[in-house]
Image 1 (tube, one colour):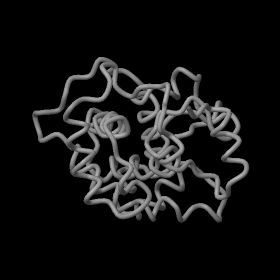
Image 2: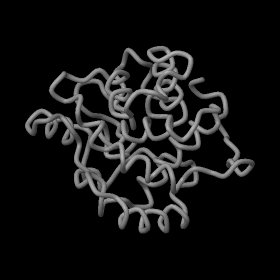
Image 3: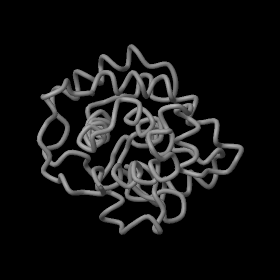
Length: 200
């Protein structure tokens, strides 16, 4: 079983500081209260045939439920599929779409947000963490200007990694768009939220 301490140690020893999907087979923190669904498992199988980079062959019901939590949160915030792709590209890079209870230093959650972003409980709540990410994105790119900037560049601006690691978000942009395409609910069919107020 992979623990937060193991993952943190691996991050220190294996540059670049990125959690690989084969390191997160057992995750303590769920992304959906009821757990992954049969639909998540079906979607994961479909995505494994479509993706081309880090997550190809590694999508499963769990990380698909985490991606769904991010996409649903973006949709509830009234933003578009591009915003969801920016958020999903970020969580691919930061956590391999896993709601981690640890990481490098004090980073936790899907977005590996630092303690300065919020409490442990907030940062490991996918709804709150996504809302916080979107709030920072809109602060840096007001008036929808993030729509006119490359997905990877927006994600890097929000996450502020070391310069040599900024490119990683752009690498995952196309796969993020595909994941969002599978998970985006048609107009009027957005699933209800039990945590509507989180992070906005």
